[in-house]
Structures are given as structure tokens and as C-alpha cells.
Length: 61
Image (cartoon, rainbow, N blue to C red; front, side, top):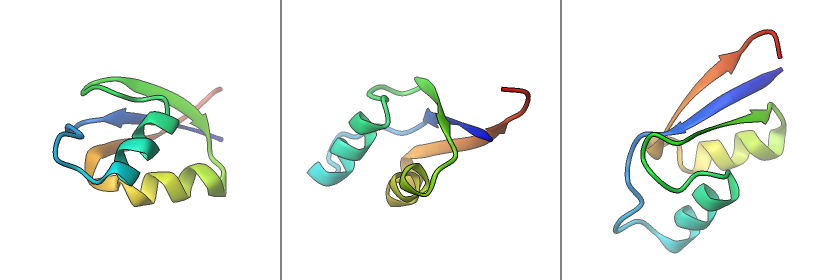
């Protein structure tokens, strides 16, 4: 299964660790989306910065 991760809030005035997580997810600006495999590693990163992201399941990929 895959998940689509979209950044919906800015990283301005956020912790450096959270900025690095956003960068490692392949995001960097509001509205940018990436599709990732649904793995525990990716889920952990998403949970850490969930207040900056929107997550949805992707079917058929």
C-alpha cells in the first residue's frame, strides 16, 4: 500500500528536527506532495510532523 503525503503548513519558526523530517519526506513547500510506501519508518516521520501534513491512502499503485 502507498500513501500520499502533502505539506499543508509552513516550516517557518518550527524546530530544526521537524524541518529535517519534512526535507527527508521529499517536501519543502506548501502544496507539494509525494507518494511513499506505507512503512513503519515513514509512518514514524509522518507522526512526528503530522500538524504540518495531510495524509491519504493511494489505491491502485
